[in-house]
Image (cartoon, rainbow, N blue to C red; front, top):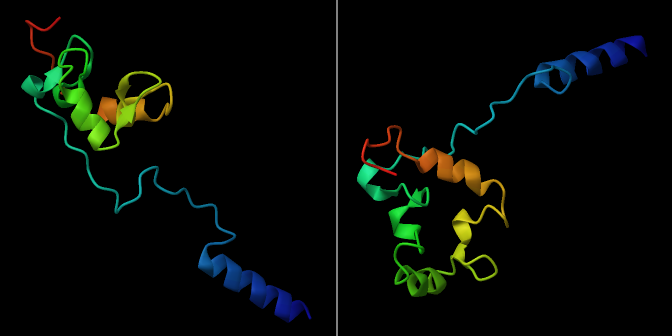
Length: 104
């Protein structure tokens, strides 16, 4: 009986079930997001220019057509931090690394 329990414990340890392994925060197969260039970023509203409806209201019909519109908060759904707090991480990942000197 003890042999069977020992064998089961060794098998579970070998599969990693009993091991305390830390998993990476981002899966290895997750697509890498490239930062946008400075001229692709609306520094006034801190959003990608192609989603900044405050600067360009003409973007709204296209976002609605793509089903990427949050009518409740009047922003692109994919960037609505009120509906999805994780969208802040997506915005941060897209933001250019260096802000131009003339940006507000």
